[in-house]
Length: 141
Image (cartoon, rainbow, N blue to C red; front, side, top):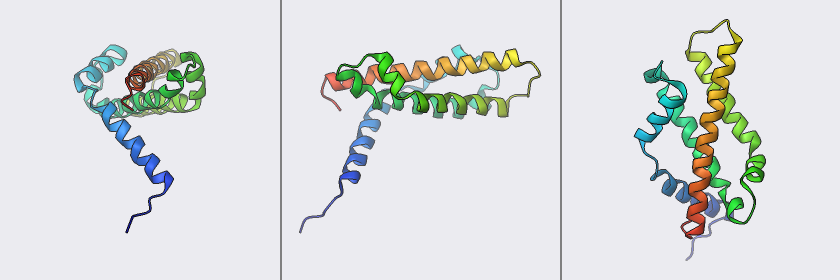
């Protein structure tokens, strides 16, 4: 007897397999280096896990949308497709940082942190997009 597997289950398994392969290429040292470059070492031990979570999610988001780049869409068009998800990640990271840091009176500091969050998420998204596009070109998806 054969086991009947639904289409959604098969798609989910394939997606998880693709994500696992992508995550093998990430290094914790690279992640820590980028965190220090964007946010410095202030509160690093407290916030590191949150930075890692958002970086991985942004990386996987870019990789998942890389199939559109492989099929000929420009990077800007693909980025416009996932603007809501990317904005959600930026807002999540920003709110996470503000929750754990001292609440500042100055909005200029908060605005600077927000731009750092945008750059951080954007950098990881682009890295995931390039990696995923490369995997599609090499037929490793």
